Amino acid sequence: MRHIALSLLAVFLFITPATAQQVYTAEPSAQQLQDVPVLLVDIRQPQEWVETGVLPNALLLTFNGPASFLQQLQPHLQPGQPVALICRTGNRTARAAQMIAPSLDVPVIDVAGGIFRLLDAGYQPATPTRAQGCTIC
Picture 1 (cartoon, one colour):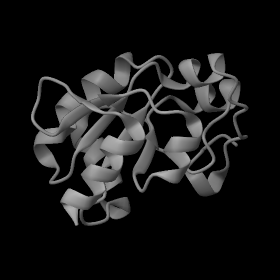
Picture 2 (cartoon, helix red, strand yellow):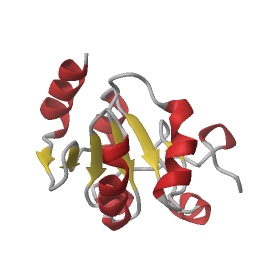
Picture 3 (cartoon, one colour):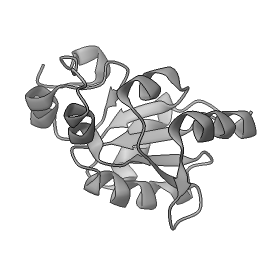
């Protein structure tokens, strides 16, 4: 199953390995992020979700350090399902992916360029919802 999921990611996201084992960097489109079977996690702050909008299938979970993040992420993980992290520009996800990958048994994808890259490409974001995890919506 893990091999199949990673193969799908390679085809749809054109992933390239980063420095740590199981961490990949990708520049998928918004549509690819919605179509590919990954757990998409938006790690920005709640105010950022409101300001720029979100991908409709994203779990909104602020990254405030690896231990608390992994604890909150755990109930959402599915066996073999890769985790894709998105932030505003890609800087936070690059660091966060490196921190959490050693604790996970699935590939972690750093969505390069973040939501700003998607907005620049014409993506029209959704309004964040409480169901996604937004605490101020």
